[in-house]
Image (cartoon, rainbow, N blue to C red; front, side, top):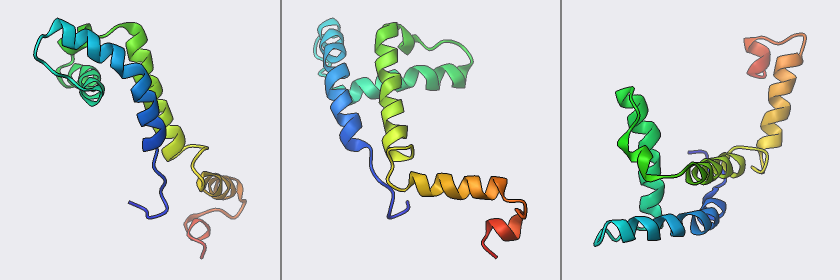
Length: 116
């Protein structure tokens, strides 16, 4: 990984601490002795799209969660992208400018894109 890459862990952990606890409590109450954690909830929700795509049929894991819970999970992913590689990323503007320059420069080509 690039040493200048920033981390979205702070923001995603804060959001996980907000949206996951009610789900954790609900599933732990339904499955006595499961002792699920908030991180487990994130991983279980992730199984829905993963298994659905892998098996090309809706995963049973999807039935564990409500639409609102999936939206909270989706927002977790949005935060990750925004703070890790998106506009909140300190160097994103440099990438944006260089991409725009390369895409719009009349002399663009491989040598121009590589700065040759």
